[in-house]
Image (cartoon, rainbow, N blue to C red; front, side, top):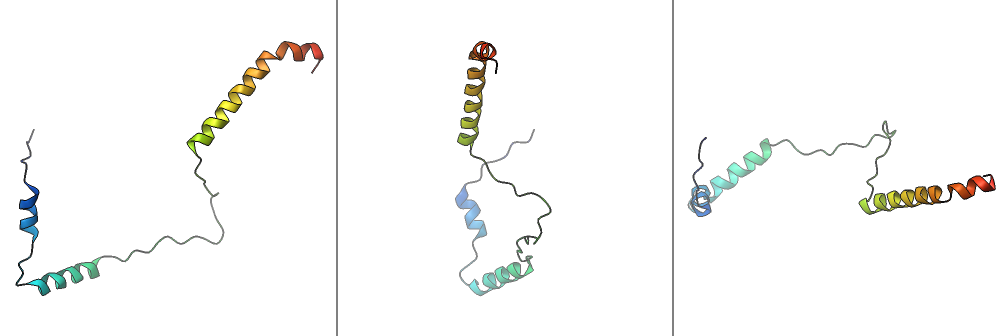
Length: 88
């Protein structure tokens, strides 16, 4: 297993800094780098959706629905005998 050596952040930053005598060279290299990058194009939305729209659901809403279902099932179990006697 290899052990990584800790390098202080200041050492890293000092190695990255460009000397003050060459500020235009760093600006030129940055602009060349930026020009070489591919431009960002967000995905286009099709006019006719091929897939149904997805909506995020709240965890609290899911929990509330689960509890309501649980309470309804308990009520149905508790009143089962009464409902059978009534004929429903």
